[in-house]
Image (cartoon, rainbow, N blue to C red; front, side):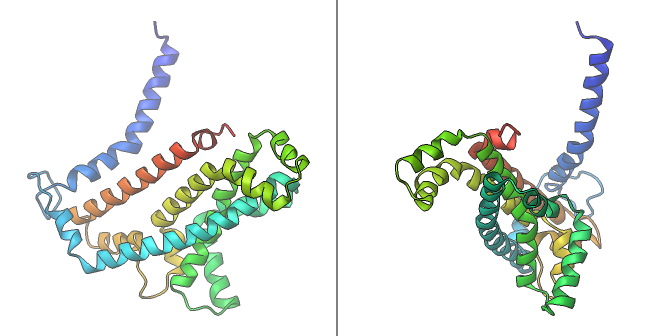
Length: 260
């Protein structure tokens, strides 16, 4: 028999989940609405998805997002893996601070800081390079945290045994450490890929003129009205994000659940 305390706990939990997911469900539902006004449900259609395929601006924005995400995530995964190993091995207090600060910092503050750094310090023209550099900056910390958590759950005697058997530090990493942390490396890459594709705030400050990503393109479209086409591209972006998160959780379930 449920106590009143449990009842209110369940009620509060359901209310929070409803607040989070009902708007997402409405976006998905109205992406199939056969009405350009999008004010009320008229009928079912898939024409808004077909229209996206023939929209050159949307295809260009999608291509930009994928290119930026793949490049930045690949570099961030390499650097984040090195940072995670260093954090685990050397136990220096400033290393976690340096790696985690971009993760904990408010996005708008990080975006403004990177904008000022690129323009006033480096005198860099904003565009693909600035966006990729910005995405690498905030993705490294996520990869490092995942790698460190994976290493923290391993038995150190494995690495000591490899060294006792005559393996060099590089051989220990290549044949022992890397195969063991590979699931976490893949999970970190998928997480950074997801964050890069979804990012709006930091990209908004570092994009410059003439470079549009999917989130920026969606923002430019909703300035007029939230049309079914906006709902359709938002639904596709949502599906891609959830797929990446699912794959990351499959590669490193214990790490992403906090059981490092």
